[in-house]
Structure formats: C-alpha cells, structure tokens
Image 1 (cartoon, rainbow, N blue to C red):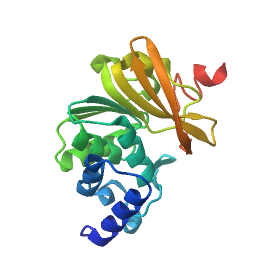
Image 2: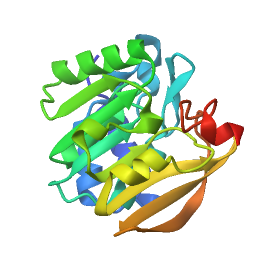
Image 3: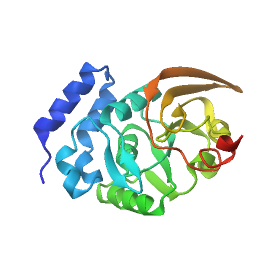
Length: 218
C-alpha cells in the first residue's frame, strides 16, 4: 500500500491547527510511515488523529499526543534519550529522527521484538530496544537528556528521575488507571521542576515503580 499522502497532509494541517508548531517534530511525522507500525486491517486508519490497537492490550498513541509530548521535550538533535513503552516502535522512530541516540524499553517481549524488526527494516541504526521493566529505566546507558513515558503511572518513578541528566526533561502521564495529567519534569541539579501539561488517558504503566508494584501499593 502506498503512503496516503493526502491523509498525511490533512493530519499535519490538523496538528498545526491544534498547536504543534515545532517544525522538526512535524518533519519527523512526515518522514516516518505510521502505517508500517500497525496491522494490515488498521492501515487505512493510519493518518487519522486517533489511537489504534497494536496487541497485548496496548495502543499506538494518538498522533497529536505523540507530537505534543515530543514538542514539549524541545529536542535539538544531539540528545541521548530513553523511551519507556516501545509499543509498535512508531514513537521510537520519531525519536530516532529527532535525536542522536535512543534507548527504548518495552515490558512485552513480543512487542519489543516486533518493534526491533520494524525499526531495522526502516534503517534506524541509532536505536536499541530492550524487553524490560521500564519503570526501572535502563541505568546501563544513563544519564539521559530526555525521557518520554508512554503509559500512565501512579507517580513519577524515582529510577527515572535518578537517570535524568542535569538540565534534562522528562514527560509522562501521572494519575489513576483511567485518567492522568501529563507532567513535564525538568531537572536542575537535585531539584525537579514539574509542570502540568493537561489531561490525558494512557494505558497503565506496569512494573516495580508503576501499577502492580511498590508505587501503587503504598
């Protein structure tokens, strides 16, 4: 199936209308073929501004939400980034376009394997995908200039704060199992400034410092 260019252009126009103004983010959205990250029967919906199922009870996020989160990170192209929640690998590909290097974690091994294969087929060589508990980050390659979490947490995982570089930015949904607030966290030495970026709804972040772990049982 060829890329539905008119649908992509319509989506980009809609994103601009709703406040996505970072040309680097918009350019990455234009270059990364979203239809390659979803199943065949869903591909006709690839450029609709809506989330889509990808298996294992997970979704590929709404394009506006992905674009908004990436815009909030203010990526310049030189960053070393951690992504928590690889999913299909779509946002991972966008990060690969926007940064120097990406480490991505996914708790479902089947999704991690599928994303790794898609990213390799598309020629991304600056990405490493690991099947792991993302609430613990990936300390082996820390610190990170930016961290993006694609699932809702009961609170900000301490491990991710510890692995954020000084001056780095972390964006993640925090709240209940059904609704969250999107928070931007910026590290300044041992102090973390937090900014509320609005209401969102994500699948739960499951792990030691997420739902089902210590953070949700306190």
